[in-house]
Amino acid sequence: FFRTMATTTHDYLHKIEALVILDNEGKRVFSKYYTPTYNTFTKQCAFEKTLFNKTSAKKDSLAASESGDIAVFDGHTVVFRFEEEVYFYVVGPADENEVVILQILSCFHDTLSQLLRNNLERKSLLESYELMILTLDEMIDDGIILETNSANVVKEVQPHSSGDRDTPLTALHTMAKIVKQNL
Image (cartoon, rainbow, N blue to C red; front, side):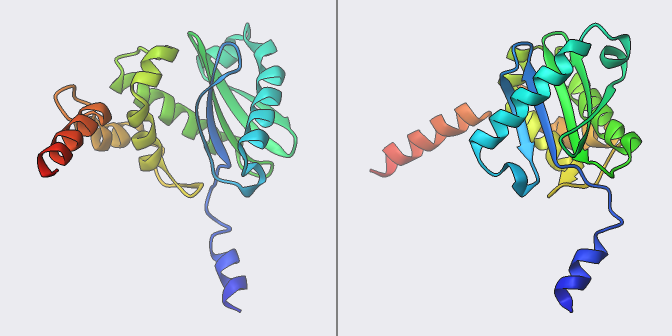
């Protein structure tokens, strides 16, 4: 009884299956999967390669570069866009509303644009990896869409994006100092 009830209580919530960023050669910059279908690195890479091959041909499309484009394949609804040298993908179930998936793509893209001052190049994204994780965490929880307003997401993530705060590297150096002091 409880298992059936738990399955049906979340049926009305909008969900995504993955958010992926690939560079202009189809190599992964960032990804987060919320479905057990792609539970191994090998399966994820194969899916990303197929995704890139199917969508990179649409690179010259104005719709894909300005606001997003839609592709349906392999049982998924995919909304994507490219920016400079990276492709942004949001993958949803085949029955998910494309407009909702587009809102997730727009929110993620707009939030990163604001946080990174419109510098969405591969290098900048990799240097700000923690911001991508925080941004996605504010928007999605276990595949369930929580927030699609980029202003709200920026407000939550921005305090963590200033240059004077600890970065993972400075946190590691601080930890190393503490460990040396305690030895």
